[in-house]
Length: 303
Image 1 (cartoon, one colour):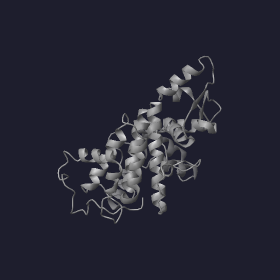
Image 2 (cartoon, helix red, strand yellow; image 1 turned 90 degrees about the vertical axis):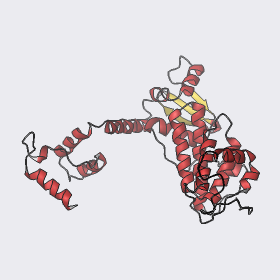
Image 3 (tube, rainbow, N blue to C red; image 1 turned 60 degrees about the vertical axis):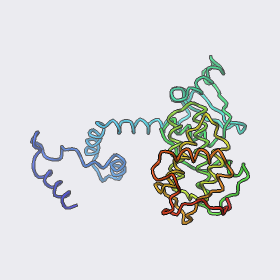
């Protein structure tokens, strides 16, 4: 910290080596516009210093793209200039949107609008899905990202398949988040949105990596192998790879229980076959790693 202040003191004292101007004309420290904006509104930073800082930040392509995404995100909330409407399922939840943004990223919606009403200026397209996954899909189309939240009485497939609800509230929330990411992934495949397809798959693996392995993992395996078809095998491959990593000690388990839920192999033979095939080629995984406490347990947990 002392060297940093000394460096700033030297820049403020001595002129610039090329222009001869004082250090006031040198780019400000890289604090980011998210720090400069609130400080400017509070009056802590002069407007001229803020504008000079923005001049240097605009040289970065990442900053300009961030500004574009922020502008489109604000445009999503403004329904004044929308030119199409998407209705979800039987709940008739309407999502006003813009053709230029939706058509460019979803070939399926573009073809559906062409088949619906060619000459209509404000077409209405109906998509059979739950409003919450589609709401987050629209958030991705406008902001290149989506954030998990629980709303609209989202029906988790864990309950639909007769599985018990986890007693722990954190495990219950992880199950809901995994189910939501999975439905967004399947919706992205239906609507042919490649970026959302891979982002939702990454979010699934990230959520699975921080959840409790003995309690949340078996439920998610049941859900994936119940609703994911063979042609959409990406999630199954990622799930098998994550399981092999846990057995090999490369992925965390986030639980004190060291046994492997072996009953899931007997319950879902397809997952057992994929698991043993996925272990081929990984060094040290031809047998279960006893040192990490991983072994097939005959005891069935209450999942």
